Image 1 (cartoon, rainbow, N blue to C red):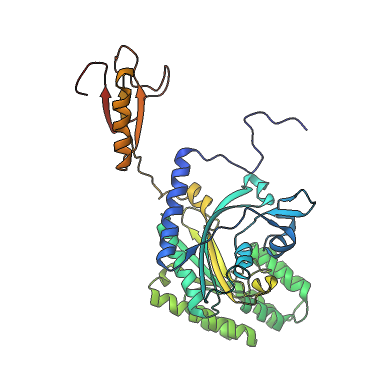
Image 2: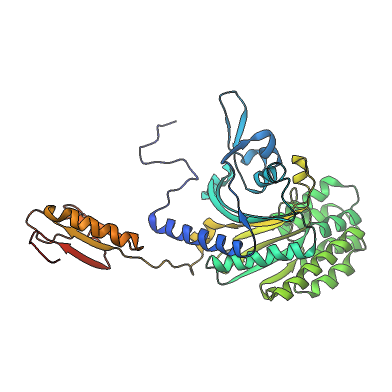
Length: 399
């Protein structure tokens, strides 16, 4: 393998130029402030975790984890999401905090498989976890907050697709009871939005027409509140009935929030089916075919850290918003340029300090000895784009 050149970086990683960083920080700041107004407090967890705790508990498959060894030979991982690390903290350092807990975060995460097809191995997420409340009100809160967060991030046109794992589990167990492998294969088709493959998997089951129609009908369960009625008629499973009732209750709360126009019920939406246990959702911006946020209920995760609590949450896919959403604009904040001769350096730098203390951006520039009013940082450098230029020349008195 050839030695990398000095300017190269590992595949899947990127540099963030100043303009992109400005967009990232704007999104981070605006979204976290939005979350704080909803009562969510920010938490920061380590970039590196133990594989045997957070790594195993994570929703990320083992092959997607970045692994490394410490000096004692213990396997560590770069965090692949924030939910599992937060579950660890909730089960330990925050175990005496009153419930429900509302926590927010913004951090970089790492997934090695994202190197494929030009995707990123390191990216940013901004999100929340609501722990200790299993009600439809809690699920509706995180969906409504996801909508508010997308708007705070500058995403103006989007839709939230909302489903429920329990409905699909109940339906599959009713139609093909005990056939775990076949159920997983059908879920894989829905998870990958491979509806042709999903139908082919149904055909391979050799079911009687009525049962086949039950499984195919889920592909049509997409729309508004009316989907709840159609779904209730499709399955007689107690689990499916309970799940659809919960989902409809969530939608009613979203109507009360006044945000249901952004939401459609899509019962093919199952998220990562190894991770979520109830309501799941994804948000799609008009400019992008891939989701800009995702979330749902994961009631089994915290018990892996010794504390059995229900939980729900979501994460914005911040990199996709930065790169693919065109409505985000950053106003260029041009600095004041203070240029000065060597003799008036102290006077000019004192003025620069005064303006900075007042919140003004200031760039300073040493003029040539002849005081000719040079406007570049050095010979051949780009001209400073300034809102105002203040000159302390070599002449005595005024500016």
